[in-house]
Figure (cartoon, rainbow, N blue to C red):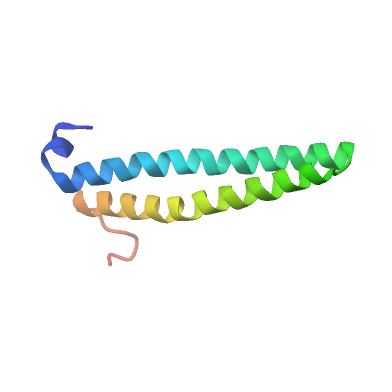
Length: 92
């Protein structure tokens, strides 16, 4: 955390939220990768009930973590961009 983030509660909150977003993205994408690897193994070796359950759970939990993390990540980047005075393509 930078010196500015320690002084400003908004920046400190944004930094904490960004850390949660990074964790959720890594975990969500990791669960998606696990589900894909499990699916390939199932396609090669045969789909047992436990494997199907594992794949579905990994995809469901990954989706629950990843969807809000992506949205919040865009929001954090937009707030940082606005603080720097940068404008997006259309100037809006």
